[in-house]
Image (tube, rainbow, N blue to C red):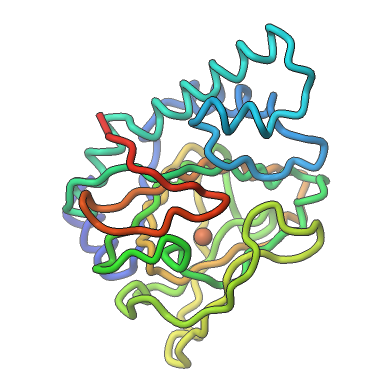
Length: 251
Ligand SMILES: [Fe+2]
């Protein structure tokens, strides 16, 4: 975290921060969460909540499964609320924040969801915070590039505020369809489209109003990604049917 990164974030609406957690923490979390994936490697919503992970884990509920659910949800919550995460938010977002929800996207090579590519959207379309108060911290556990489905964005678009958009299903949508509540991209931004090439074990901080989407994974490399969502303390937000946002205090 330095002035250069902060200026980049202010200008572009995103910035990459490498190795906030250790490589072994990234490895451990990836192997923990994979235990709960279904056959299609569908995304898991709120893996930091025991009840939520319990509901989405379709294995028989043996003592071992329950132990693993407890282990993974505790680790997911610890990451989301880690002091390092609140330090990042204090520095870049400049407001005291609370966590709202999380999501794990596997983008597993050769899985039903590998071809899934998000349409250009603003994350803030869903919670609809005012005052650009919504921000996400996205932990990419492995390298992400155009071939394995990285994200692209329109730098500077976070300054446009919340744009009109379609209301599409964005969680466990039909296999083969592309999720994302596509927004209208102002003409002058179209040529600014930038692929974000991310070294493994990096966190991408993304302003909730920055327009972004993702590519399909056409490679033999998975692109696991843990996304934690935050809002400035005291700001209003929509709870949402699948995200079930609620204020969670940070360390
Ligand atoms: Fe998004």
